[in-house]
Image (cartoon, rainbow, N blue to C red):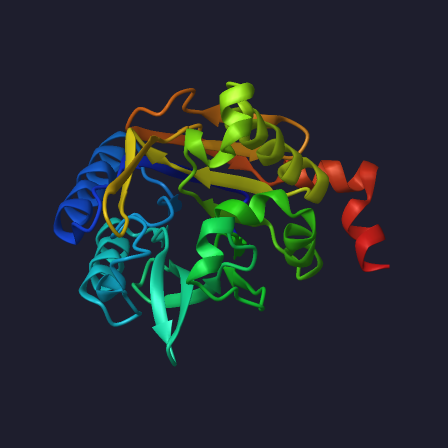
Length: 278
């Protein structure tokens, strides 16, 4: 297993209900990233294929969808692991917010259904119940999605399963805070920028957070909902905290070379994982 790995979070603008445009954007950003450096693992934002679709459930995806096959082909092309954001999946007439990890051979090796749904999602989505990790050549990887971030027990479950790297696709906007965001201007940014490094440090894991860029939009029954993404895509390490970050909501990517010895050094002193497994 590699001691040093290079990882990246892609922050992209997501066009509502337009799969073709979003896939082209994902390909462009991945190409630009790999022109700069090879990465072992790349994380895309939540809902990056379709955008949120509470009233466009005709756009649901699954493991056999063309969009997923494109991500599989990209993983092979660039010899990398990809967390292909997330998409809404219909299973027996229940809808789940689903994320997949594809390895560098193009194989789907991990599937995760969002456990802690954001409040508006609860109107039409079903929460997942399982947490899993997968051992790979670059480490043991787990996935959480967006609002999962605020529940420390979710990442604790992954830690008990032996996770080294947690990937967090997200679609987090300024308006998610509702009246809080109006009263406290930076409520959502402060929340994300506090919790991402906290999850890395309290679990001795590498934490990769990938959010959307620019304006967020979604089709409602009678109108188009609009807000601004908070951006803040970042990579967080044990001991060091946030080691790489996009400080606004512009489109792009952030990457970092991570030495796993950092987590080993942290565990030798703090013994967090040892105590959890005792």
